[in-house]
Length: 192
Image (cartoon, rainbow, N blue to C red; front, side, top):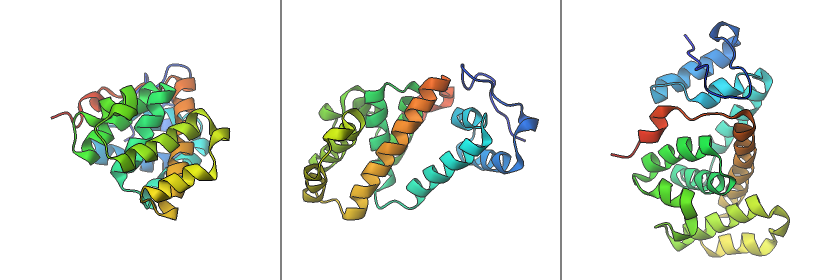
C-alpha cells in the first residue's frame, strides 16, 4: 500500500493513494521498503505521473550508470542545493551525504559553504565546476572541463558532474516551486 503524506508539498495537492497509477505505486513501494519511509519527493512528483516517470527514470540512469562514486554524486547535489537554497534537497540529500561519506558533519559544511568544507582539492574542483554551472552556466568553458581532468576526473566522470548538476538544478526548482517538504526522518539520518 502506498502511503503518501498529505503535507509532502504545500502548493499542489498530493494524490490519494488509490489514484496513483500501478507503476508509480510499485516504484514508491520499493523506495519505501528501502528507506523505511516514503520520501516526500515521490508524493510530490506523483501529482503528474508522466513527469514522475521521466524524472525518476533520468535520476536512476544518472545514479545507476555513473562513473562518479555515490558519495561524489550526493556531494554535488548538496553543494548545488545549498547555493539554490532548496530546503527539500538540502535535508534529504544531506542525509545521503552523511550516509555515503560516513561523515556526520560533511553535509552541513557543504550546504553552508562547500569552499570551506573538509574535502579534498579534487572534490573542491568538482564542486567549483558544479556550482559555476548552477550560478553562471554561460561562463562554463572548456577550461573548466580541463581543470576537472587535471584534478583526476575521467571524461565520463566529467560528463556525470554536468549531468548530476543539471538534473538537480531542475529538481531544486521543482521542489521549491511545489513547496516540497522533507520528511522528518531525513533530518536525523546519518548523524550518529
